Length: 322
Length: 259
Ligand SMILES: Nc1ncnc2c1ncn2[C@@H]1O[C@H](COP(=O)(O)OP(=O)(O)OP(=O)(O)O)[C@@H](O)[C@H]1O
Ligand SMILES: [Mg+2]
Image (cartoon, rainbow over the protein chains, first blue to last red):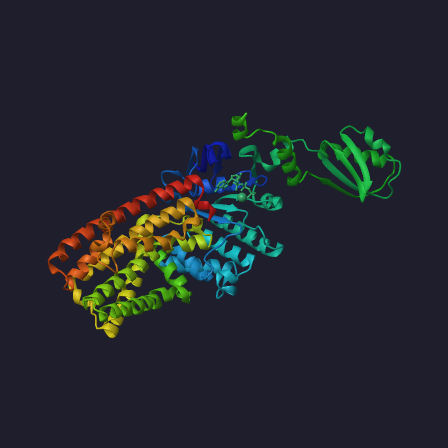
């Protein structure tokens, strides 16, 4: 069984000429224990999808099941088993972290011993106990976000939605939060949907992603497969003893072009296929090679290629207007 | 449901106890209204009006403070979340309506009991008026409370559907209802059509019943109690249904996730 199954989800906000199509037909299946990354530019519909899955928004049409429970008909069953963490979360300004967690623990219906155990353990692991006597309004962004992460895990969720969980955090705190979540995913076999503008984070946590633009998935699959299918050129970087008389490189099949700056950069169709002939040619000319590196396209390049290429799809509301 | 209710009570209790201004509403505000209106009534009765005028007004003051605090407690269940921009987080937990109403109502009940005691004792000490003489008819407070909870849910519905712009309605509505329900005067002195509206307000009947039991006209105390009870329950049911619909609606329009 899939932990998350969604088909034909559409969401429109407002009516008539003010209508905004936030999502126009999303299909998605995620297996239990998988971490799934959702990428897309601002306003693409990521948060809207997360809200729909966590039953805070009702889709205009389409169906969804989480762990077998219908998101529209059984929202309480869904909520019991899921956790939601958003970036830039606010809680009650006058309450202290433990009080906030206590409130949510009660809302989730946890009995007092489970509540205490979970709160203690989350506060300890996230280092919240270090500022537990401060009211929420006095906490820094990073401290607040740790409370938000703790809140999302209070009910031992089987499915976790993370919407930009490390937005606004410094590198150290972001790393701490990310590692903590990754440990938990391992420990508990959690299913996760992560949205982030920090593509390195997505690449570190997820193997499967979707790129969403203007309310539609424009690409979906394993990161590796998407990268291969896009045929974005690789780059071979070489450190040589000297950088003269290199014109012969252009005649090697698979080489697109080359340039010299801080080393020799050769843009090629496929790093794996072209590296051998390049090295052989250099050897024949007695040019010593000190260092070699093949750079696959970064997720940033993948993202920009996909979003740039497909952003011309007209939106539903525009289609209607014409 | 009990644990969820305890969550809502816990939230209000903790937040309110950190806010001296809010706590004053259940202690200082009743004191102010008892003093100002009690003295006014005393002044009027020394000027030739019947001595019962004072008792009449004091009973109204006490009931009104109870209404105000109860409505406030239910509305704060949503208002505090909107102020703190975390309404959506509350709804990631269980959103059982009975739990929400019960928890916030319990806080309202706590305020109501404090207010009854504060105003009741002050009225005895300052003016020799003992509201507790109403005995069984003090149960009218409970129906005022239920009516106030219903109106609190109506305001919550407005806030959830229309947004925080409607928050000040919370305070205005109390005043409007006060005018109609004859808190400080018998509704008979109002013009005919206004009287008709007054009779549709449950609190009008509860106040009449309470006063009647204190010796104004004991024979109608029972009937008015029943009318007040039935109307209060009807208003409460309407408020609860409206709130349920409002939450559904706000998940469609996206208002819920804005806060
Ligand atoms: N509650 C709402 N009411 C009305 N419109 C909304 C609401 N929430 C989102 N939208 C609209 O839906 C579209 C998608 O927004 P969404 O927040 O899902 O984007 P996103 O992918 O999360 O963007 P970002 O990366 O900036 O967070 C936007 O056009 C937005 O204005
Ligand atoms: Mg977003």
